[in-house]
Length: 84
Image (cartoon, rainbow, N blue to C red; front, side, top):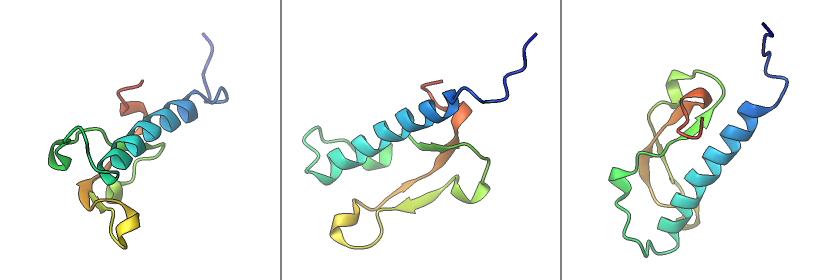
């Protein structure tokens, strides 16, 4: 059998698509939240291709008004993405 050493870039594409969807959700909330999405019930998390315990639970959107809505969030590893 062949061994996949991640030279195909598939993980990068999955991570990029996953994070694009997360950014679209956050942007929708920032732009007025027409769909009335409850930020406390969002389960779609961003992903990174490493296991970093510090990023599992975070608070994002801190800063100025243009930095997005403040909410609890977190990161999953890319292979745990629903897109996978």
